Amino acid sequence: MHIRAVSDLHGQLPVIPPCDLLLLGGDLCPVSNHDIGFQAEWLDTIFRRWLEAVPARHIVGVAGNHDFVFEKLPEAVPNDLRWTYLRDSGCEIEGFRLWGTPWQPWFFDWAFNLYEPELKQKWALIPEGTDLLVLHGPPHGIGDAVPRGGGVIEHTGSPSLLERIRAIRPKLAIFGHIHEGRGEYRDGNTVLANVSLLDVNYRAVHPVWGIDLTPGSDPTPR
Image (cartoon, rainbow, N blue to C red):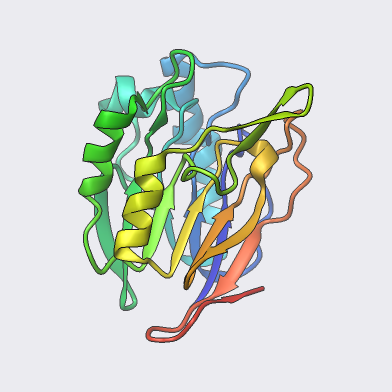
């Protein structure tokens, strides 16, 4: 299966190369307007048209900390969009078991924020045998580094998420949230990818990330 993945679009909808499965790691809505009504309308119009034009057989995604409508008024999110939306839930696609979850460590007063004890409970819901993990926030120490000045680097990801990933060993975990952490990483046989589209200045500078997966074999990044 040829997979493409992208996160942190913030309203900038990229051209997606042909693929079997597109994974969306949250922060989909424009960063310029956090109004819930605006986000619902944007999802029902601009985002809908983009999804319908994407050359992928399947599309699976989660929300992010800027996607307030998904947390505050989920009934306003159109339920007939051309994707499978996951919120602490899973699906199976062509033999691969997927799980999606939007949470991250508390940051200001954004959407889908929790403190570490509550996050650990969310990660405990991720089933054994999950192949593909669709996240918004990163695990601790992987694609989560934020420069704080004076040479200080803060790792902002969730420690208990890293523990859960190491316990269940998915083939792939994609996420974003920390634009500075864009990159591909490995932990054992798990590929972890921060697939943020935007850089720290909210410029769409990164390509849509890709990987090939075959059931029962190791991942092949592209």
